[in-house]
Image 1 (cartoon, one colour):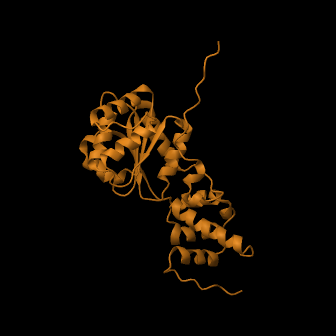
Image 2 (cartoon, rainbow, N blue to C red; image 1 turned 180 degrees about the vertical axis):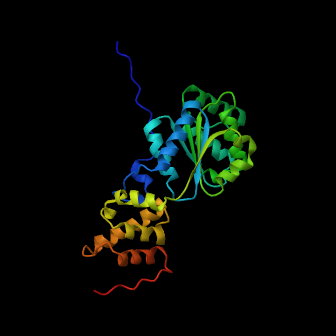
Length: 269
């Protein structure tokens, strides 16, 4: 008699193509220092069923890095949570209930609802990915701390946020004292930009380092989101007019679209 097999749980992580800004075609996943540091923190969280926090300014690749690492190490056990700013506790519990694939609708009674959520977390290993944590209120942050539980440590929890995410956690001493490790994203340095961008998307392959640095100084600012926007505008321009070549003049045209205060006077040949 054959033993019935269970199909893997569908991943709640989005496909890699959705990680790039506006689904930039041909964008490659770059093995940056930040991705390696993120992987180190997440592996600690999984190993110890601990809480870690990944934070930094918008557009630096935090969510991309976290998704990339979790696809490698916890594709089927990650519970991905992302709430609107100021979500109330009913919204917090309802989304968590559904992401855990619990049957029916969550109980309106807080105690039984939370007990079923806790039981589900204790039934099998889970990684709770809570993105945009800066939008959560004090009650929501305290709820996730209690859900984790000092003794139970019911799941590994990855907190990801921008803006005042770190400050919000610092203001909640009970939560802050339980964060095992942190990693703050920073913009790519000029050296990193020169090493990474030529391989980021084929449009930059073979580009002179001086032009890449000029682009970064003017608009890239070490942000992958900024570079994706610039690349997308360049791609469209070259697609419409294949006779164009990647030059400082074309870059300035793109910059005039990114920042209307940038003047662009086409060069005459």
